[in-house]
Length: 424
Image 1 (spheres, helix red, strand yellow):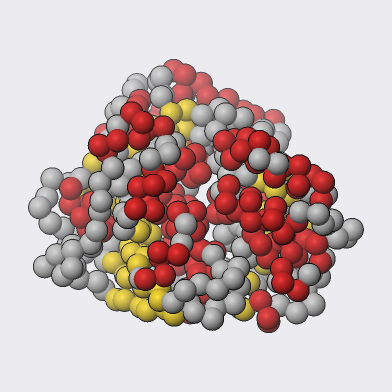
Image 2 (image 1 turned 90 degrees about the vertical axis):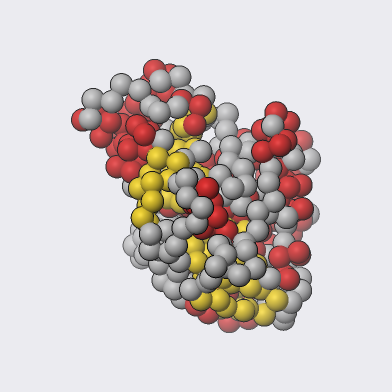
């Protein structure tokens, strides 16, 4: 019996010719990542264990992004501890605020994880890197501590669910719409501790940024990881990373075996699919935009780790250009990284955002987690390109968030209510 994408990677990193779902393995790690919140807890554990050095300072990624720029004294203290740890242990991939951005975007654009490699991170959306053909998953701070000490993790091999998309996506249909539609059809727990393997003919129409968005939200289905085959689209993206310039031979074409055994498989036809809107209070509460009538809004958030890629910025700007934000609406645009922010400035997108009345923010998690730079007040309604819309996720418990793609977010900002761009 052949192996799925996830099984192939786990086998190659455990010294085994094959692995089976349910089997427990010690898996070698290519990269271990933490942000300032998860890292702070991890360092407390390492101190209790009297650990004096990490397994390999070149294979550790530390990126402060959740409450940075520091929003208060507590976040400044937490970030200071991470900074001092990074300097003390000579961590190669420590990225100071203002020099990198949101962890998941930075890992992708710098090529810190390549096809066939393994990454664990102290953040649930670490699964984003599965779009690049890597095994990437979020874990707790104790697991991060053990990994920093040993370079390995003890893990159970997950069964794999295959989701195939058929049909050509219509106008204003992107990866965000596919994943919201998937969650609305299959639920938000169908993949609990399972690997999601995305496939199907529709993928040839999806940019790498669409795939990154879909892999990012595999966790919203309960997935252990989400992963895509490595094809020419993947390779084309990775060729633009700094690592490719140093080690082009690191890119491998990774595919599942034809006789791989999947726990379950689903076929979703996306031809004729409308842009999707995830109503409160679940990413799985997806509806076609035609169901979202007369929903007045107070705030729009465009960007962050789910839809903060340059292509997302460009899409939103194309809708906003020459138009003004509704007078009762405020808009925050958050590029996924400093590099994306710089490109927005160089190519005139930043000017479009500011001219239309948006706040063009530094790269930060900020309002996505209800942390800072856009927290919602009582009874306020937000349209967001982020990945979660739980009760109180972005602020007050009486506030509401609707999840959409960047084009819908921009059109809604102009209209003052959830709106399709064609109806402006």
